[in-house]
Image (cartoon, rainbow, N blue to C red; front, side, top):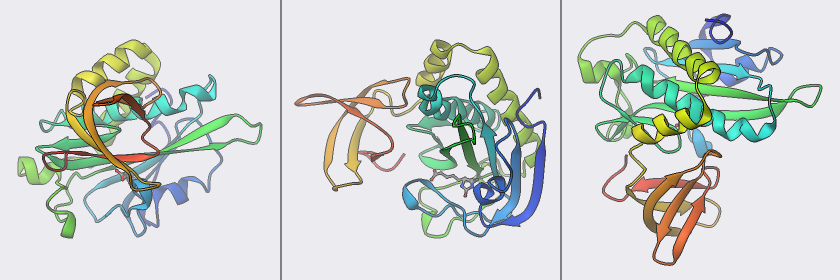
Amino acid sequence: MKVFGKDILYFDSVTSTFDKLSEFPPADGLVVVADRQTGGIGRNGRVWISDDGGVYFSFYIVPKGNSEEIPFLGIVCALAAYKTIAEYIPCSIKWPNDIVSDGKKVCGILNKSGFCGDSSVYVMSGIGINANNTQFGELDYRANSIKNIIGKEVDREELLKRFFHEFENAYFNMSTDDIMEQYKLSCVTLGSRVAVHYNTDGTVFEGECVDICKDGSIDVKTDSGIVNVNSGEVSVRGIYGYI
Ligand code: BTN
């Protein structure tokens, strides 16, 4: 590992790996991993169940370029997580950056950004992989783990190593076009009918996801034309059940 995953700080229990990582100044590639989180944070204000057995980590990315590339980093993280998990189980990306297997979520990603002292931007990427954890309580119908699917434990250290190998390969070696192409090929949302729920006012509309853009948004074809949808504003459900 050149930068990402070279320096890893391990903890037994933290509130959230985001909280722990923010105790350290932004340093490109610094990773915090925990065996469990007592206050794991999910997207849209949800809780991320973080029992023993999962792989929970946050790491800093300090982009050299301009802040426009920040939303694209979510795509890079999703592609790296997809390639990592695909080594173990059949899976796909569900836009924007969930990894799902057989309709159930096995990995979630939440990226947050902030400013360094010199006003350059940093990203904290937070990734939760359901590796050897097996119980999801009331979310059992839509969450699963690699162990549940393959029937044996996975080496969590190896999983983490593979993630950073894939992340570095995409981040340092692949062109934006190649990343987009591979993301699209792995994304179950593209070409599917989706229901878009605006979190702000509860509006819902349906259509077909016809494109995924570099800024992390999607184009949804509706009866009244193409609507561009940004992940910050909406949640998307597959019409025939959650994927
Ligand atoms: C989602 O809702 O899909 C995003 C889940 C992100 C969970 C990870 S676990 C490691 C990091 N720390 C957190 O508190 N959340 C992220």
